[in-house]
Image 1: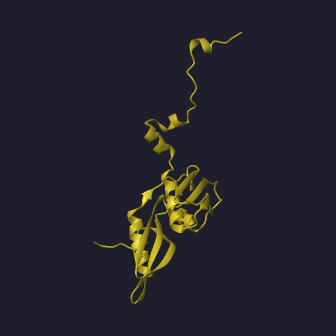
Image 2: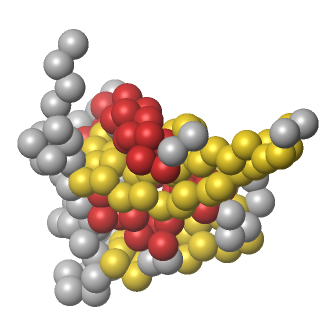
Image 3: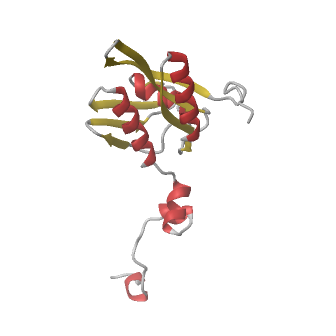
Length: 181
């Protein structure tokens, strides 16, 4: 199987966090690393992965491969998210709100990596609760899982897109339509 360079595919890779862990054994400590990586195409597709290895570069490589396998498409409208969403994972919560053109990415480290890989250029976010990068990334992707656009919602409800935006008024009968004097 031929491995392609992610840069040739146009993928954006962001290393969110690298953690050194030690296993204490009879002869001393054995160090290894784990790397939390977010990968996206900048066009609405992103995923994350956690790679573990004895060397940092190997851990990052494994994380990238796992992230590529976990990539999903998320709705983006006019370079922002379609609506306000809240994602939760463990003690971490991430609040995301759409922003007008020119606002930029207002986000902390872990959520900023997600937004840049996703291709979102205007968004307001706030990370609440846990500051653990693993929980924040998972909460961010949980929030994106709950996002939807009009086409997706219309398909889910089994109707047309314009039916979603029509104001439901009761149909007029001949008696109610007649003018009263």
